[in-house]
Length: 216
Figure: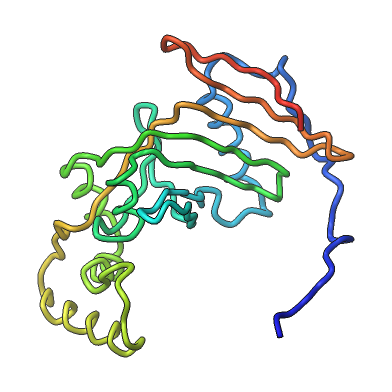
């Protein structure tokens, strides 16, 4: 019997801030940078760079998962993963994704629609070399998204690659690297009382960003 629970009364009032047109400029990256800085400095937020990546699978269903933003470079948001993973396969088949940041301690979220492409091999190598050795070995050990019989098998795979690279630098696997996600729209959401939240949508026309307010 599935667990049943009434969540009708599970709610809070959002009263921490406001998002007004008078405080916005023409560049959504400037607003994002300010919000991201606020999130990094907030004692209530542990990983400000945690973002939700949503892709469309070959089965036609969307799927979302949390990854870590590693850099904002030349108008793109960068993250790294296994190129053999389910999300990489989805990106290969449909190189358009959704990105979302949710910072509940600030009662804010940012939603983006993005075009996606792989970063250069040199960029992936540079980031891979900055990772802790354990993370480098983990990238080799895990065939991400493949089924596995048990946890013990995964630990055996890790032991094998640890032995393989003992006493030497761990090279970046060919099947591992980064993606750059270039936004075509930003939606900034600020929680407000009585569910009359602030929503500001930025879109581009002829290379120029414009924004408008959406009803909550």
